[in-house]
Each structure stands twice: as C-alpha cells, then as structure tokens.
Image 1: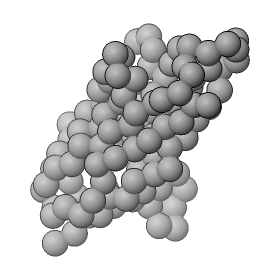
Image 2 (image 1 turned 90 degrees about the vertical axis):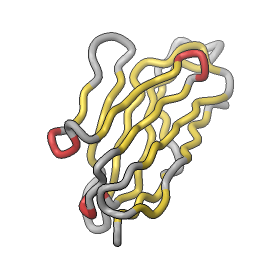
Image 3 (image 1 turned 180 degrees about the vertical axis):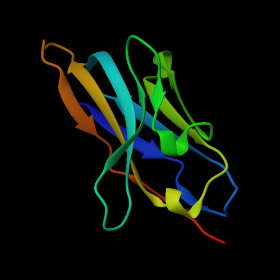
Image 4 (image 1 turned 45 degrees about the vertical axis):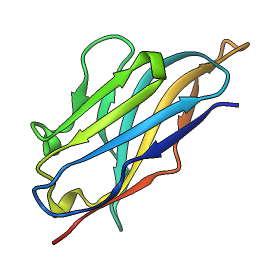
Length: 121
C-alpha cells in the first residue's frame, strides 16, 4: 500500500527555521500534486503550499517569502522549508499527495500522520 511519512517538526524560536520532509512509499505508479497543509488548535485545516505535477508551485499569502516547497522526484519526497517562523505558524503540518498506485488507474488522495511545529520563545 501507499503511505506518506512526514518528519522534521519540532520546537523553534521565533525567527528560526525548520525543514519538513514528506516521503511517499509503497507501490506507486505516479504522483500528481504534493501539498502541505496545516491545522492550528481550534482552526480548520488550511493549504500552505502546493507542488503540482505540472505548472508552478504556489504558497498562501501568509507564508509567501518565508516558506518554500520543493520536491525530489527520484525520492518521491516533498519538502517545506520554513524560514522566519512566527508564533502564528504553530500548527500540525500535514502532507497530502495525489497518487496512482501501481496496478491501478485511479488517482487517490493520501495524507500523512502530521508533524507538530511549535514556534515559541
């Protein structure tokens, strides 16, 4: 089966940096979009950044200029480089990917387990 595993979260001071990783593994035929979402306490999950199979990457305005999404196709891994972190960036960060498993023709939606990011002094 296909799974997404995130890593890289933790506690960081305001102004600091973290790099999140999301590795897709299993019987994968192809990967379309890979994205990062986040969910702060008491708030809905929101899209942070997207790396489409075709086209340009996008990030939401609240993190523009501070966060960068990238992808290593050979490793089926997406990254979220987060710089100049602010307390309001505190959330659980989730990886999402649209993957066609090997042996199927269906595009399925997969989620990672989430990784906690806490920005605090």
